Image: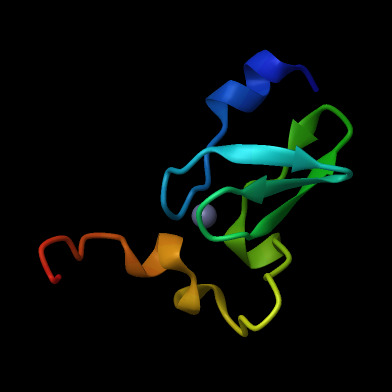
Amino acid sequence: MNSELLDLVVCPLGKKPLRREGEFLVCTNCGLKYSLEPGFPVLLPEEAVLPDGIESFEELPCYTDRGETGST
Ligand SMILES: [Zn+2]
């Protein structure tokens, strides 16, 4: 996987950039780890590995940020 493709893919929940970490693409915002199959990333929250302390992707900042602007 080249860096140009990495620039194109974003976290499907929060539309945030991802960074490469071994066999995973990790969201820089919510920490969700998407598996990186040979040649393509699997950008499905249901298939991704949750970060420590998170039990469902509904707890992730990328998820809770969606459409909830102005609440601060
Ligand atoms: Zn995210």
